[in-house]
Image 1 (cartoon, one colour):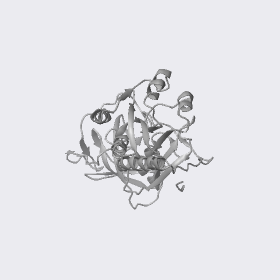
Image 2: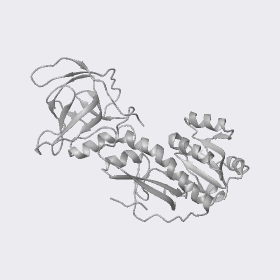
Image 3: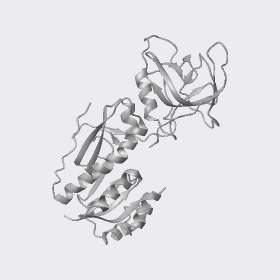
Image 4: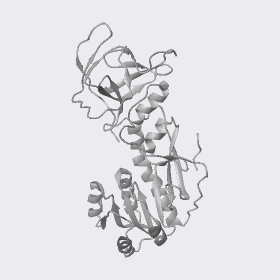
Length: 333
């Protein structure tokens, strides 16, 4: 079967799969549709290079747009990180001909920001699912699904990098099933759940949790434009990395700074302590300071210059250089 694809796309995962599709003799991209807000400039450049028509529309369900893309005679619409919903009229025109690649292990982890949520939930693997699109959100029949291991060395940045590569691979493998006429989709299980989008304010960490839970929350937000946040008095500290250490379990003031060295500090958690190893804070960190999840507005922070106090006096100031990786219990079906 020759695939004539309408590609609804955004991001590195879509870019990577684009390259795979155009290299296959039985696949062609007839047109590409980009996000209306902040369309992907790299995809624009790539599409122009290969003389593929580009659409940037506010409403893909508009009747005039549907009529226009029908002139290209696509036999499969493919969505990868696209941000509009395919509604009834579009689904009717392309019955069983719209698929989506989702970086989640369906029927679990429907919704958004899945790579953050799997880390917060201490999952040992994350899934990538290619499924038919229906009127629900990530509820269509599953065409192909694969899972990938999560270790304690992983964080959001490492999972995102892996997903950029593997989403392209899994989607391309699913497309080859269409070419071969070998698609055998199966319905999703009845038990699953939906993850809401994470919004501003969700980044504040609550140290009234176990060390393991705090560790997972911090690594789920390890990216240059994210970071787990807390308040020390009236200033925000942004935490990028932490480390689980062997420490006694004891009761204390949760969120209190209980240890301090030149390149890290220790915070009391619900059950033990957590070592904070990469962070941004303008000011002095002292033994006894309390990290609180108390969001406030208009907090400004300017530099990475830090001062440390060991409880007996202020130590020498030093510049803390944040060295940081580039950004970006269920069986698989």
